[in-house]
Length: 143
Length: 143
DNA sequence: CCATATGCGTGCGTCGCGCACGCTATCCTT
DNA sequence: AAGGATAGCGTGCGCGACGCACGCATATGG
Image (cartoon, protein in one colour):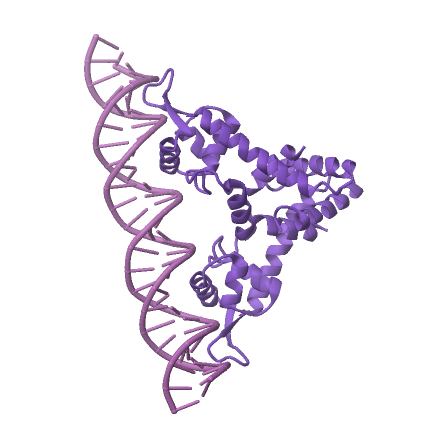
């Protein structure tokens, strides 16, 4: 039975799948939000303003990578560097209003995709699936 | 409600998650099976012997990429190039016995991970979740 | 029989990444 | 109070993966 889940997850994690999904979600948004910069944008939205080093461990990237991506997002006006309140070495990466709007729009689009594909399900099943998936991801081999 | 699913999927697709999972799965297997070569190996196992160009569109890669990965797998003895029965230009990529064993082992390990994380679930819920996930992936925005 | 098309592998430029360095600011010890 | 050790940041460098385009071998159609 694990095999059935493994196959489904395999498709989810497949490169083509991720790329296609990402392209369909970022349709029409600026060039700055691409598959490279998105994780930084998203992590920033999840956790609020943070330093680059802090973000790096979250995103699973070297600090240098975060710096470069943040710079790109900054040039696009989606992220702003703010002086750290107590540490004058560090810069705080903050979403600008445009950045917040971009993330909100992306989330909305993805949620729409999902609810659309769940439209035909009996509502109880959809909700139960959402709960189960959440639990599976939280407990599972992916935590 | 789509948001709940979106969050869970976000974690699944996150780079760190995929890398950690992949590393834990390929623990102890040869160096040749890494995150780069695995998709070719896996696709080959799913569909049987195929030409490089054919695989390329499936994996979402340029033909050159498939060629290079296949060469690496060939050197590791997991894949063999067989003359195409009717077209002498083409080479058929075929899993060797060692390749088949490697894929089977990987699948078994992943299935074990999954069933382990589902151990505490009521059996009905686990089975229902497997079915729902399969359906969601097949119908959903990921097809 | 020759021109065009197809499959494959390789060279080249590009891009993202990790590592290591320099710079600035902070912290700690004396 | 001062100075060396430490931490954060950004950048240069080399590496590896990728796509593109070319050359070679074979197929196919006129």
